[in-house]
Image (cartoon, rainbow, N blue to C red; front, side):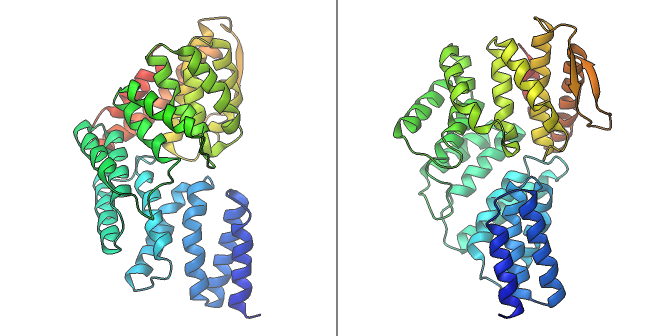
Length: 355
């Protein structure tokens, strides 16, 4: 067996490990060996795989440099991984909503680049419109979001479209953002009644139902969705955003003890949270849970807080911790707002905290 073949076996074994730090370390070891041995084909194959590994393995900040290397190789005419590279454009497009340090102009340029590459490859524009819609939601541009949502719906599906089970959940997320909660419920009901499943569903869809159920006066249905969906995400740190929705919902629906329980359980996820966006959402959710708890039966109770934000671990009174986490969330939101030239993220935090 040649050196190239041996490295490709190691790469396949690393892929089989599943997403997480162990997989990333195994792939980075293969990459180092390929570079040392001058195995250019293996290096390329490994870097392409690392784009996915970083995205779903808890280190998305490394995604951008890995993707840039692969895109440069593509520009040189190395097209053997074209499909994986084009698919990764979606993760890059989503990544701009997760890191405030990436300039707004760079985000817009990447969406334009995504469209150009998809057109050149003869691919459907559906993913382009979907991720432009989500970016417009993030920066608080309702006109662009509505138009891109319309085009998303008119576009035919293609090989690079998200799976048919996940797509309705993304549409519900848009309607939630647009406050069109009845339409959210309609789409969600049809999707859940279909019985279709994937690795992220139906728990993601049921989580997206929490806000509409609260807003249109169906809290009991929301609690049923919470109890059905939460067990599927409670141990998965890659689903920090969904967990945050569950904590927030329990606080807003009046389940103070449940909200407090979940906030205490997931507070340590702030130590090593993958992105500023997830940090902001979890900090906000825990803040509102602790504020509600402090107003109820947990006033004066001490909570064990993890080490984060330069502060050591220790016990903190529940109301004080709620205020600390709210300030943390607003500080991150301010970074996004400065980049986005809007108050969309700060307003979102403020709305989550309002009970």
